Amino acid sequence: MPVKKLRYLLMVALLAMALGLVACGSDDSSSDEAPAEPTASGTTIEADPANGDTPTLTIGSKNFTEQIVLGEIYAQALEAAGYNVKTDLNLGSETVALAALKKGEISGYPEYISTALTSFYDTAPEDVPGDVNGAYEMAKQDLAGDGIEALPPTPFASANAVGLLTSKAEELGVTQISDLQGKSQDLSLYGSPECRQRIDCLLGLQENYGLEFESFTPVDIGLRYEVLDKGQADLSIVFTTDAQLGQGDKYTILEDDKGVLPAGNVMFLTKQETIDKAGPDYAATIELVQEGLTEKVMQELDARVDLDKEQPADVARDYLVAGGYIEQ
Image (cartoon, rainbow, N blue to C red; front, side, top):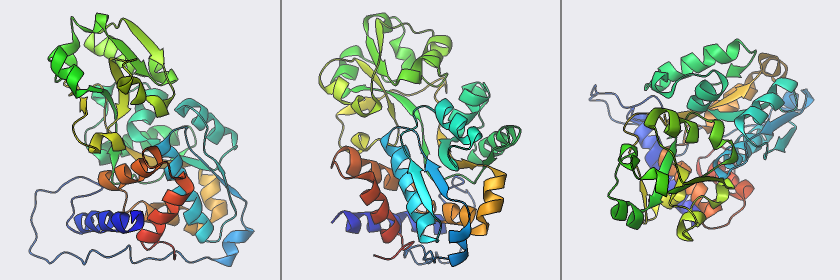
């Protein structure tokens, strides 16, 4: 059942790609050409024995569901291509992950474009290009200065968001973040531990919206909805790709009317020396398996882990099978 549902979502995603509506944004131009048939990826990964003679690849990720699932997708795909692969899928914040990459402790990991720009290079959220290509080129250039290569981004984008129970939003009469002015001082906010220092999190809410909260409590990222459900938090920092947001209208996301919480597609960060040693299948495999990762597909993958309590490795494998990247 989950694989069947995922296959349907992948077909929808791949059809959208054929129509030019995914990855780099929609195109206003029209075409009379018939869209490609929405089948699986059409490219099954084949193992090259030569890849097994290259240095072992260690694929990392930060410490929350979406990142861990992505890490598993990349790792299993590279294994299918014949590489020797290890994983380190609980690295912590982006600063920890980047440090691990720079030190050579990992070969690469997935990072959000907006996070890279705002956290690593102090780019103001409003200065992050809204166009994914422009944002990617900006991040790619900055990262290259630190010796880091950024592979092309995923179709889906994810962003931090201020979430709350819909019943609480109605009680407060709020629909956008600016509506919290004059009310936030009586409200509790929960977020990830690094939220205090991030401009696309608490820091941005304070500096760009002028909000002060009754309290801010660091919380494990896996509990960001539970604290709302239990009444521990009035507000919680969530992600726009969270599975819970597709499960009816229980939760409300406040509009980021000042553009402080920029969206971010994911790019895989690695080093040129790793690319050179691993050979052409390394980057090509990563780019290939990203093709079906639309927002709806990512929400489904996240849901199977967070709501259905499946293992990220199993969910990643089902994605790769459903997309035709690997065989059953």
